[in-house]
Amino acid sequence: MYTIPQSYFDNILTNIHKKYADSQEESNSYDLTGRPVDGTQKGILIRNGKKVLVK
Image (cartoon, rainbow, N blue to C red; front, side):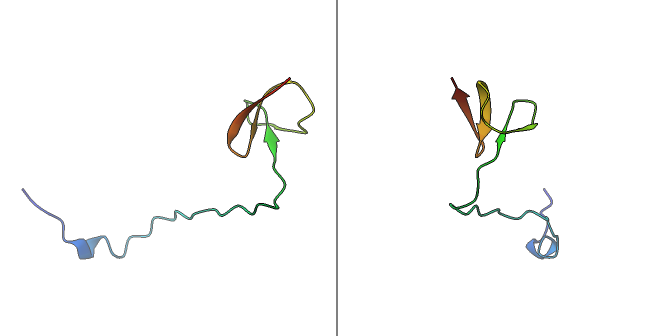
């Protein structure tokens, strides 16, 4: 079995960054197709990455 030396992976950039959300940031709402909505209509919406049922 061949092992790749760890130094091989040291110079590889992944371009993955964490996004830190501020608590004061306005929450955007989206419908299930990904279109932005104002949040006043009824149905299932996505707010802050979570599904929310609006009655």
